Image (cartoon, rainbow, N blue to C red; front, top):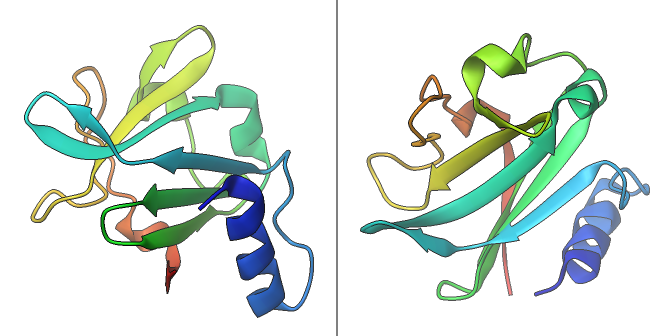
Length: 121
């Protein structure tokens, strides 16, 4: 699954072109230590707008769509590890830590409240 394919499926389901290249971050499962999950690097200034995240998993042939509203995550610099003006996050793909940022230096932010839908392919 590619970012363009996933955005098209989501936009088709929503009935309008809500997800764009500028407001959507796409990531596939990667390893981090003994865990697997999704890496995100989100510029701090973009938290002021609506953001969409597509978390792809080739093993399960599925992806998840997460959405944060404009300014929904206040003070992201206090919630995530910061590198180069951006928030770094690693969300675990496995229970019971699923969708929780596990990086040292962050606040263990839980992204489950931002889950919109899961898609299979």
